[in-house]
Image (cartoon, rainbow, N blue to C red):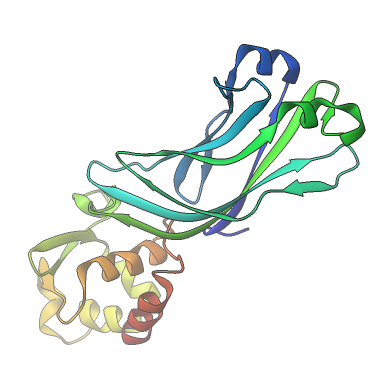
Length: 229
């Protein structure tokens, strides 16, 4: 797996009692820099139907949006799988809970289908993150810390970073901060001709932050990496 592709594995114990109760939620999964919670819920209009859902929570104090493709997989006792169709879903701050697939309880619990073993139903959600959009600066760059010693200015935005850390990863930054350039002694350095959000994506990769590379960011990251290598 990587930050854009991962599997959420959930074992629903006491499955028969869970269905009778009507609802169950998994523990929180931390994958791709995002918190995920799976849920099983019996439909109120038909007790033989149940929905498998995912909740997505992004640590952000502003608007956010996650586009993803999700496949729900039921694991049989012999290790084989029954997969749902791939569904493209959109999570955001106002709607972060999405139904992924439906199941018939009769099919799930009927012994010949081998979905439940020792009263445990095993469910997996295969997730592919297409894009993650946030309008906030990652906390590590938002304010001074014990490792930051310079401010990078992009337009009206400021990013608190470490000269030495960036210099280790980039000859361009090494020359800028430690070579014979005007930026060497400055507390604030303006970075021109870059898009703020794209530059933050590059910093997240350099700082090994999650969500650095997705389908929507890879091209811009490669472009900036070529410029600053």
